Length: 106
Image 1: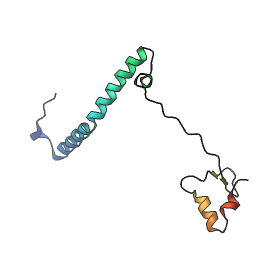
Image 2: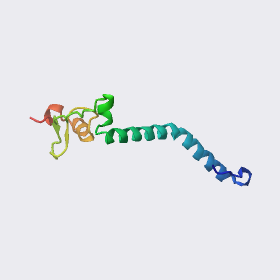
Image 3: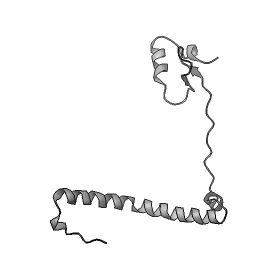
Image 4: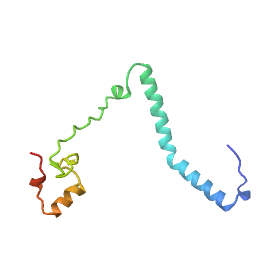
């Protein structure tokens, strides 16, 4: 490890060093875990398995996309499934007097 003459460093250099040390401390455990995981995955791969197969972890299943329920009245490329936050075009159409039924895909 390098020896530093802290007395010879300027205030900005000391603050940068302090910031760098704090960051290194904060990420140390994450780096160690990532290293360990990479070693275990490499060993499993060498043996012909995936890590998930060996530990019995289920892989995340992706949910199928939901079909669109609403379509923009002037731009049919803009659709919304009815889930999540309302898109601005939907909010604007409602404010303009349209109803959700008017925007529904038949």
